[in-house]
Image (cartoon, rainbow, N blue to C red):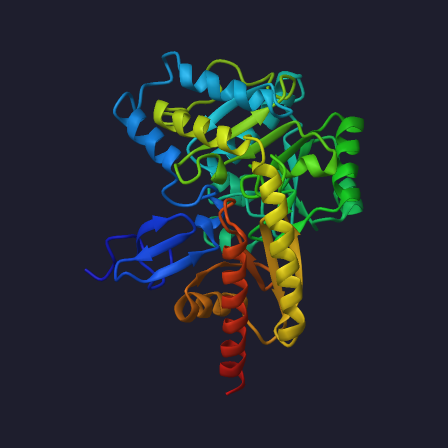
Length: 398
C-alpha cells in the first residue's frame, strides 16, 4: 500500500505539535515555536486557556451531545448572546466555516423562494475569495486550485473583481439574490474591502431587494479589533457566516441572520447532527464572554496597531524583500516583492527561526497571532522575521 493512512491532501511540514502553552506550540522533540498562525486565525485565546480548558472538562463530564430534536438550554443562551451583540435576530450553529457558508447560501436562496421569487438564486461573489471546500463554497470562487477536478459545480454564482463596485453592480439581473463576500479577504491576500465598495453593495441591496451575505469566518470574532469587521464600515449585513475564532480551537461555526432574511428557514429546511451540541455551546459561551469582557477588544486594537507599526518599520531594513503591510487589527499581511516567495519564506521562518506564520494569495505573508499576545510577543515576532529576512535574502543571493 503506497497511500498514507491520512489522505494525502495536505503537504504537511515537519512541525509536529503535541502541546500548546499560551502563544507557543511545542513539538514532539521539545522544539518551541512562537505561534503567529493560531491555527489559521482560530486559537484567539491562545493554547491551554484555563477558562476554556475548565469549560470543556466540566461540560464533557456533564453532557456532550444530544439530538437537535430536543431543547438546548446552552444553545439558547449562546444564540441570545450573539443576537444581543450583533445585527442578527436568529442563529444556526454548525461545526465549521464551510457549513456556515453553506447555511448562508441556502438562507439567501430560501428567502427569495419564500417571497415567491424562486428564480432569484444567483449570488454575486468575488475574485480571490475563499469560502470553504464544499461544492457550494468552491462554486462561489474563481480559483482553479479549488475548482479543478470537481466540476460540474453548483450553478448560480457570478464572480467579479473584488473592490470593483461597477463590475458588481453590472452583474445584477432578475435572477440575483445578493452578494457574498469577505469584508477582509484572508486566503486571497489579506485584502480589506474599501469603504466605497461595502457601502455601495449595501445600497444596491436596499435598492434591488437583495441580501448582503458576509463571510466573516476569518475576519470576524474580534480578529480585526471589533466584534465583526463589518462594524468598521458602518454597514449592516443580512446574513453572516462565522467560525474559526468563535470556538477558539473547538470545532464550531454559526450562520447569523436577520428575521427578514431568515423568513424561509422553517421546520425541515435545514439541519445538522452535531451542530449546536452542548459541549460546543458551553465552549462558545466561554469564548464570547472573554471576547466581550471589558478591555478585550481595546487590547486587540492596541496590539494590532503596534504589530502593524513594527512590521512597517521593518520594511525599510529589508526593502528588497517586502513591499507593504495590509489588513486590519490582528489580521495582517506583508506583501513580498517579486523574486521572494511568501510560501517559501513561511517555511524558512518555521524551520530556521521558530516562528509560525501562514502564506496567502498575492504573495503575502499572513500574520495571525492569538488575540491575547502582548508586546513581548510582538518584539519576538519582529526579531524572528528580521533575522529570517536576513538569512533568507542571503540564501536567495547565494
